[in-house]
Length: 370
Image (cartoon, rainbow, N blue to C red; front, side, top):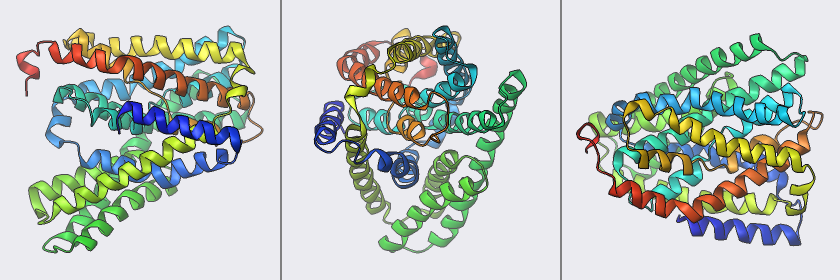
């Protein structure tokens, strides 16, 4: 989808939400997490190049690891300024640290972007969500215990890393089994069914084990495509590609419609200080996080693309809406998440084409050339 098409679908959803307010609010949270997210993550990972990921892994890991934690802390710090307690502030930070892989990948598929830059941004948008979800779950559990402190934050980082590694293991294992099933079999229906089982099966298996379902689906997609290219050589992979392209398009349209339909525009001004602090923190955090790559020698124009590509959307909204009713500042977090999602989508729609054109004109260094 092109960015203007995303904005248009969200706009249609907003119009529907005015007529039928709140009708799809519940559906957005649960459908995003358990219906749309697994196949969208798998499809995006299926189209990634394994070797390109390895070449750019230091940058990807920096953005998706320390970058997520840093974003959450910046948001929490900004909310502390407006007297939000540490627990809810960290929870909002975890929710808002998740960039929207659906929006980022949809936009980058339609814009000519240097391959190395596209790999970094798309992988960041995929992998950082796994870390963000783990942060969200652990901070939420810590709040339930009634204690938030330095020790709890340290455990968040360690458990996030363990959950990510465990999710990767589940995804790779399921991809290996699927590859064995597909080896020597050329039926389109079987290949589509098997890849669908990997997309959903890895996600739900990891989730049941309290690991990262997001990392599991991503790892399953990358690993299965690796086996397809290097080992089993699916004879009709083009048919599988077309199926996943269509499935991703349909899922994208439905997700962005639900985002718009669930939005209650009138509620955004209910907690103005909270919302403004969150918006300011996200703007600052993208500049700071992109700056983590400065020592790596990437062109500054590329860092501008990384900053503007930090769109928030369906996943952050789903996490906010899934908060239990008794969580302090729940409604303020939901309102701020909607405001940040709208603001980042609008900012990207106004600037992404210009920023990408500058990145395309930037001379790539020999080590980055494709």
